[in-house]
Image (tube, rainbow, N blue to C red; front, side, top):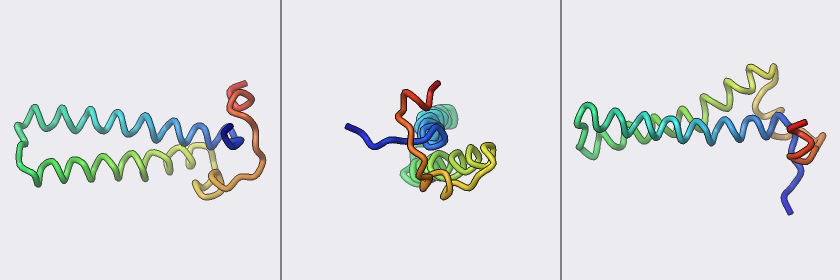
Length: 86
């Protein structure tokens, strides 16, 4: 059984997952389009993907919700994921 989450926590988590997928797809497209086959190119695109998906996207979602990311992730008003979707 999973720990109860708030709607904001679920939104931030979903945004992070979507960001990882989108940035990974963008990185792969850039690698193929510009023929970036050096290890340094892969490293730069990988780090950019992680920075965008793990830092920028969650913080922008938190800003959009009008709260800080730390405040959202330590919120102690739990609901179940099914209640958060209602």
